[in-house]
Image 1 (cartoon, rainbow, N blue to C red):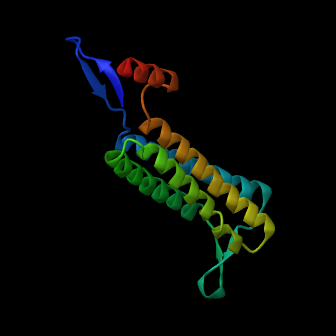
Image 2 (tube, rainbow, N blue to C red):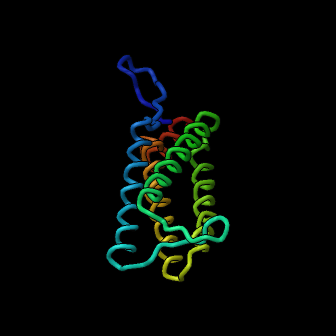
Length: 159
């Protein structure tokens, strides 16, 4: 939240929270980045993106599952961010820690891939989605002003 002067000269608090369209844009861009990484690994480099499925069978990781998973997880993450920001001024900071921890834990799922190259490829797709989503959502849900302006505003409010 930032403090701004209204037209009559009184102080009012401006709240910079992203809209659902910002969240949807984060999901679409994350999914596009994931699709690009999938395309690079599977089609250009030629890595077989296969994992051990339930029941011991082999399951191919296709572009549709990569895109849909990215969209779903980013939208769920954005909803969690909105919820946390409504409940705490530190919501963005706490959400960043939670999202980063979730991204790290998600790196375990590609270990079921059938080859070391596939493990690396799938892990890189997870990292791409996490990086784009976390950075994008932090940007659109963060304060309008930068760190210097927040420090200066706190100094004016105290002194």
